[in-house]
Image (tube, rainbow, N blue to C red; front, side, top):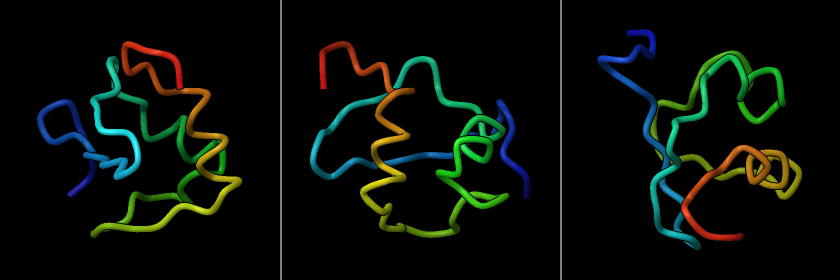
Length: 64
């Protein structure tokens, strides 16, 4: 099943709990090399480089 507005990709940041609004599109995550073509099918660890790239897209309602 591919991610869609009806079935979006969920992410959990165990160090900083919150929801990114608006959600980061899968195409953006792939282009930024955070994911490699498709999202993980279970909980996955991001490298420091992947997390640094992801932080630029997060809008959690406060500064991170």
